[in-house]
Length: 183
Image (cartoon, rainbow, N blue to C red; front, side, top):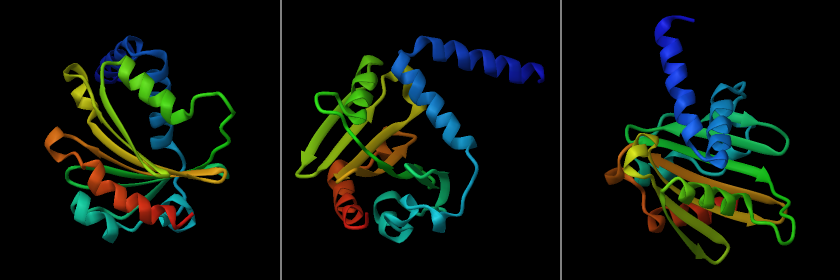
């Protein structure tokens, strides 16, 4: 490992120590997803939820989807645009009565870090936006809409580098409605 990599590594871990425990777990999950073995997008349930053609009116031109993770219980698919990244997610979900959902825990962790989080429910569709605190704006801006059906949950998430490029919940919700018919 060269000196530059060591410095970057040290800076990364210093920043990680400053995050809440939940946020650190989320960051490690994202890191794990980016190094996960690639499987063909055609074999990934998440990649079949929406097409780039359906997303591009909202996100701008997208590169083809790539499978980021594909296990029996959880599948992720990503595509990049000039403004950010789109992630489609599908997973088995077995919430326990009385326990907060993974989404609720994520919202709480983001708020604990100082992010502005707005959540709206549209029937079975839950959408949220996340605006990081100014000291963390390098992590980007996020809009997500998800749907729970039976024992599965699916979501479309759009991450933007800049606040001006955020996708509104009102624009993302119709795509979540389509997604809901495909799993």
